[in-house]
Structure formats: structure tokens, C-alpha cells
Image (cartoon, rainbow, N blue to C red; front, side, top):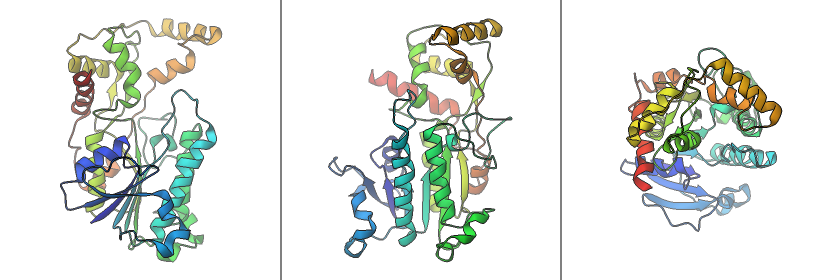
Length: 338
């Protein structure tokens, strides 16, 4: 099986190469820079210019069985990136590689979207695939725009907009399978993701003052993510949108306890009165302090993502790695390299 992976030099791409290199799969890369050293386990890496429509008559690319589209602009938590850059990369590159997929002999396409394409905040107990997308900000908006382009050009379950697509006849579910994967906060050895702020607080022994808030969040271990991708490649899974996360959602207090266990530290969690902390945050909003109402909301909100649909599609009862096991592995990797 020949697999083309865009963004192969990124965090997820690098881990996916490690996960797949010993299987009966030949890996190829597609990246902005092909001057980087060739990855072990990767047959060859191509440039984006080589999949341009104008190069089709001269293409010497191999025949691919599946394409995994990882390349994208990550969420900038400091909000310093220009909005248009998200659409140029997250939407534009997706359109380009998906057009290539439709013209190619590849039978499977996996697009890495994000739960942020579905919702900035979760309404109800957990986020499921039937939510009406309501992204906030250019990152989520650019991802949902890319999803819409894909759904306009192939047949998705319960999506009527495909009926007018010029590609309708050539992209039936039986011929090509397309998966939109929406992972939540991804982490793994070498990449803490958005856990960085909390990790630094715990590492320095600074007490966590929000222990009175019992919020719960979902995370995605890179090991579970690679397992799911391999399943999508090797099993017969219906075309569709699939959310991705570990089986267990964790509170911030539980997360701090796990980090401390991995670092051999005692957790320092202060259960400051909720009303008092909310008052401090309100004052912070007025005085433009680091802790304001919006930041407090983000730090203490629930964001639980259901992975029931992807597990059912793969025919499994649980993910191979628990949320705690994945987080300990991630944190210990940083302790070992300090």
C-alpha cells in the first residue's frame, strides 16, 4: 500500500511515520520544504509544485492508495497570526490536495480538521459529530471551510449539497472513501500542545488557585491518534466525519495530579472560593490584568469530546492507551530531555 502524507515533517507526521514504517506500507511525503533530510522509513518526499494540475502531463509520481492530509497552520494561542494566512494554508492547501486526490487512483483520503471547526465551546455534556458547526476565529473557520469544500465534491452521508457536485459520479462511496478527522488537544513525547502553560506552572511549584472548579476536558494521545489512522487505512470504514479523543476526560485537578506523578512532585492545588476568583477575574477585565473573565472561562470550561463514533466504526471498545498513560508518557519525555 502506497501512502502519501502531507506535512510529514510535523509532529503528527513524524509520529505516524514511526507507527507505520514496520507495516506493509510504503510511505511518501509531501511538504513545503523538500530540502530537509529524508526521514527514515520514507521512500521519497515531493513538493507541492509537483501536484499542480499543470504538471499532470509530466508527473512521475507513484500511484497512491491513500492520502493523509496533515499539513496546516496550527492554532496560534497568542492570536498574533494574520487571519488570511489560516485560509491560505488550512483551506487553500486542502482544496489543492483534495483536487489531486479526486484525479488520482487513491481510494482513501484522511483530512485532519479539528474540534475547533465544530465548536469553540461545548454546549451540553459532550461534543458529538451531529453538532451544527459554529467555529470562532480564523483557525476554526478555515478548517470548516476546508471541510465544506470536501463535502461539496464527494458524497457524504446525510449531506444533500453533494447532489449538484460535478464530481458526483466519480466519487461514490464505493469508489473513494473520505474521512474528516476532528481531534481535540493532541500531545505526545516532544510536544505538550496546549498543556505548556499548565506544565510550566506545575514544574515551578506554583500553586494552582482554581481547584474549586471541577471542569473536564478531553485530550488526544499521539499513540491513540496513530492507531486510529492505521485503522482507517486498513479497515473498511464508512465515509464520514469522526471526532477523536482519548476515552477518559480529565479535570484540571486530575491533570495536575498526573503531571506531578510524572515529575515526582507533590501537587499544590488551592481551592479558592469560586465567587472570589470570579470577582478577581472581573476586576482583571477592568484593569487589563492577565487573569480576566474570558481567560477564567477558558481555564475552567468543560470541553468533552465523544469518540464513540470512531470506535464503533473501527469495531473497538476502547482506545489502546488511557488518557493518564498518554499524559505521563508526554510529561516524562520532557523531564528526560531537560
